[in-house]
Image 1 (cartoon, rainbow, N blue to C red):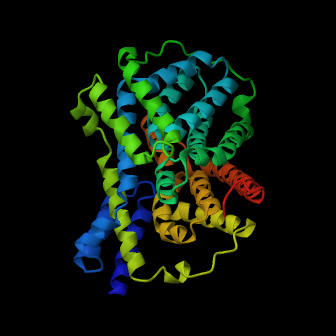
Image 2 (cartoon, rainbow, N blue to C red):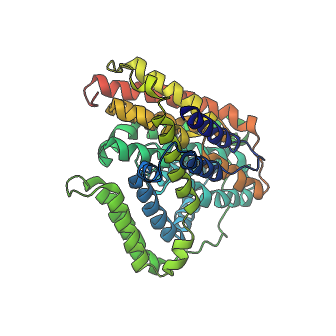
Image 3 (cartoon, rainbow, N blue to C red):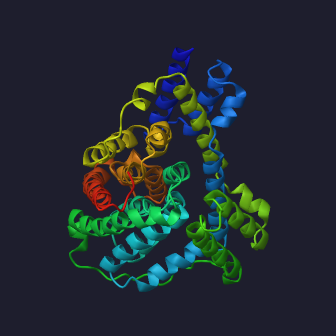
Length: 416
C-alpha cells in the first residue's frame, strides 16, 4: 500500500510543479483534489482519516481573512490607500519608496496575494500617466509584497500554517520578523534603483492627478474599525483566551452584518478554490506521511539548534520554493517541524519560505498574479528581467534573515 501512496504523492506534486510554469494549462487545485481523492479511493487513508487530516484552524483563519479583505475591497479601502500614494508621490524616487512600504505593510495584515492583485493596475496607471517605465515599480511591488508579508502570521498562507501549528503568539511572531521585513524593504528600494539606474537618473516628477478611485467612507466607518479591531485582538488573543482563527471569523461575521454590500456578494467573491486546494493538500501529505516515507527525517536527532540548522533550513526553503512553491513546501515539511517544535526553526521557516519566493517569477503565487495582471495591461516582464533582481534580493534577504534570527537566538530572545 505504501508504494501506492508514493505514486499518488508524486503525481500530485508533479501536477503542482507544472502549474508553476507559465502557459501550462494545468490547475493546482485539481492536481491536489485528484491526489486527495486517490488517497481515499486506493485505501491509503479512510474517509475519516482524510477529514481529520485537514487543518481546519488554518482553513478557517484563511476564510475569515478573505471575508474581511473582500469587504474592505468592496468599500474601496484599497483605492483610498492608492489615492494617498498618488497624493504624496512628488517624484519617482518617492513613488518607489511609497509603493514598497505601502505594499509591504499592507501585505503584512491583508495577505500579499490580495494586495498585489488590487495594486498592480493602479501602479501601472500612475506610471503611464507620468510617462514612467512601469516595470521597475511593478517588480518592486512584487518583492515588497513577499518581504512585507514575512512579518506576520496573516501575511501569507504559509505563515498562517506556521503560526497555527507552532502556537507562537501573534505579537511575538511580528516582533522577531519585523526587522527582517523592514530592512528587506530598504534593500528593495536600493536594488531597484541599481538595476534600473537608467530609469532613475533624472528622478522624474509624478504627474498623476486625474485618476478616479471610488471608495465609500460611509461604509468604511464600519469595515475599517472592524479590521483594526481584528488586528488588535490578534495581539491580545492569548490574554483573552481566543485563538487567531476565532478572532478572524468574528471579524468576518461582523463585516457581513455591518457591510453595506449584500452578504451573498461578499461570500461569492471568496476564493473557495484556494480553500479546497489547502484541504486537499493536507490529505495528500498525511497519506504520504502515514505510509512511512518521512520516518527517516522524523526520527533524526535535531537537538543541535544553531547557525548550521538555521542556514540549512533557509537553503532548503530556497530550493523547494522554486520547485513546488512555498505553500505546498510548507505543508510537506510541517510533520518534521511539529516533531522538532523549535521556535527558532519555526520562525526560520516562516522567513525563509516567504523570502525565497522572490527568487523567480514562479517562486510565489503573488509573483504570478502580478505578472499576469500586468501582461493583461500590456506590460510584459520577462523571466530573466525579474530573475536578475529577484535572485539578488532573495540571497541578500536570506543572509539577513539567517543573521538576525541567529543573533536573536544567541542573545536568548528566541527559544530553541
